[in-house]
Image (cartoon, rainbow over all chains, first blue to last red; front, side):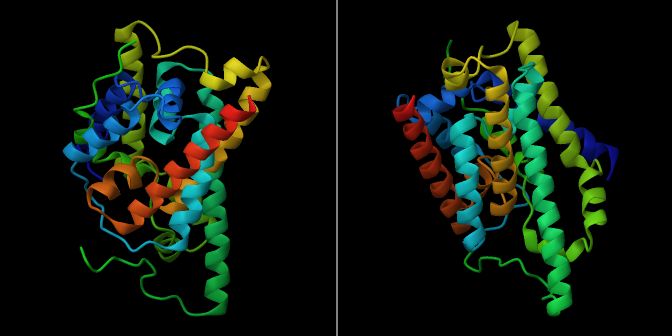
Length: 141
Length: 145
C-alpha cells in the first residue's frame, strides 16, 4: 500500500465527509423527514449521487439471501438511529457525543460478523472442501 | 437551515463503500482463523485512511460552519430525557447497522449508491429492503411516540 494510495483515501474521505455534513445527511432529523415522506430531499440526494457517481471496485452481483437478511437488520438500525455508517462517522467528526454510542455499536456489529464468519469458516473446512470462489458474480454485467 | 446541495456528492461516493463491505465468502477464503481476521481488519490500508478522512472532513465542516450541523438527536432526544436510554438505543442500532451492512455486503453508500449505479441486482434488492424496513420502522416509531 503506497503512501499515494493512503493520501488519496484520506483526501477522498475528507471531501466525502465534508459533503455529507454540508448536505445535511449527518442530521437524524433530515433522515427521518425523508423516511417519513415529509420531505423529498433524501430521495433527491440519492438520485443526484447516483447520477454523478462512478463506483470503483464494484461488480454487479446476483441477489442472495444475505442481501435481504443483512439489509433488513441494517434497515431497523438505520430507521431507529436515523444514521447510516458514513454519517455516523461524520457525526463523530462534528463532535456529536451521542454518535460515540452508535459507532461503538457499529464496531461491535462488524466484529461480531467477523467472529461468526470465522466460526462458520472453520466449520466449513471441517465438513467439506472449500469452493475456489464462493462469491457469485452476476454474469449479465 | 438549508439542505439543498447534493450535487457534488456522487464524485466522492466512489470510495465510501469499500470501508464497510466485502463479500463473506471471500473473507472466509482469504482469512482462515479468527485471529487473522481481527489482525486483517485492524491493518490501516487506504480504506482506513478514507475513514479517518471522513471524520476529518466533517470536523473541518463543523469548524467552518461554526458548530455541528444539528443539535439534540432527532426523535430520541425529543422522546427520552435519559441520556443512558438514548445511548443504549443508539448502541443497539449500531450493532444492527454494522452486522447488517457486513452481512449484506454494503450499506446505504455501498449497495445504495455504488451498487445501484451499476444496476447490480443484489444492490437493488438490498436497497429496496433497507429502505422499506427503515420506512416501516420510522412510521412504527411515529405511531408509538
